[in-house]
Length: 179
Image (cartoon, rainbow, N blue to C red; front, side, top):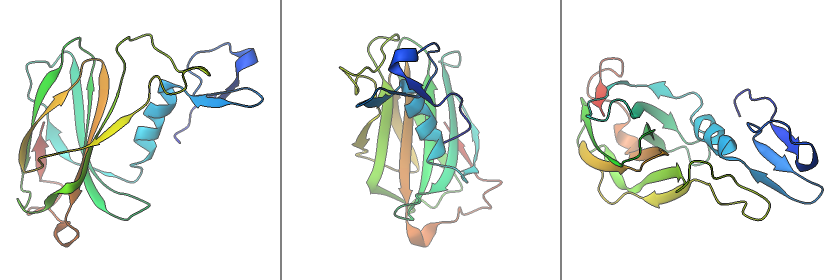
């Protein structure tokens, strides 16, 4: 977990909303802030890829691309992280220059979305999973792909790379993705 203070808060003494984990004497739950911190802690040690964002929703969308290795299964991924601050879904085209077209696997590639129908939604002891990341498998993964980024969401696309094709065709520093 990145440096984050305060991390824990007792439900009986909650004075500040950005706390990440709320607890009492017998329960706990993670806030949406906790889940955001978890997203970014999973890819510590990642390599930031050169990327450019080309969209008509430039006021409401930010995105980045990284390569990272899962610490549990040691598999390598390209992760596209996109935050949509707008009220409408955004159709995002992802393209990779310099990537071997056969290096991405559909099997094992996932999409994870953190969102809610109401911007003010929070988790609670009665609804500890009201705002949590939802993971699903990506059906079609390739060098060029179109994805939907829901409104008011943080979305992560983890594209599994073939272990035999871990390098970009060009050096990583000059390869880039267009998102």
